[in-house]
Image: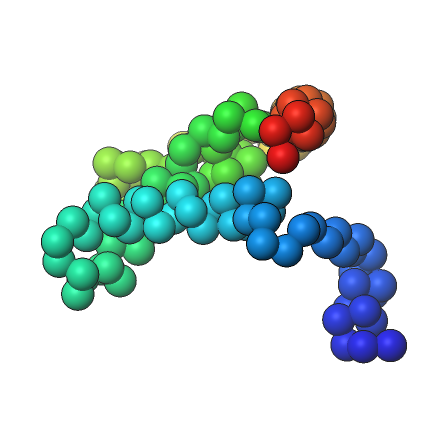
Amino acid sequence: GTPVKRLTEEYRVKLLLNASRHPQANPTERTNKTLISMLRAYIKDNHRVWDHELPKIGFALRSAVSEATGYSPAYLTFGRELNATGSGFSLLRDWSDVPEIPEDRPTDHLKKLKDIYRIVKNNLDKAHRRNEKYY
């Protein structure tokens, strides 16, 4: 088969086709529309600096709570919200300043994320059913 077909089979990806010329039905196109709106808001009249604004836009997209999932992409990826103030980047004076982490904390954290992923899946299923009415 084609390279794309082999790749989708290897990674067990199900290709979904949508109607051409109907971008509302394509989540990527909806995200692109949001990205374009954000770029316009950030660059205002100075179109030469759009690439300088990408880190801010990326941060905004990663830290915004999704209406569909109920969580931000950053939280679902890292298990925590992103630090917007930079206070988490202060220099350590010595290793005694590093807080101790209980041994069971990572395990508890993984259990919590597993529960959150279950909630997100349910929220996405609800959003999908709701969106079927509109798209």
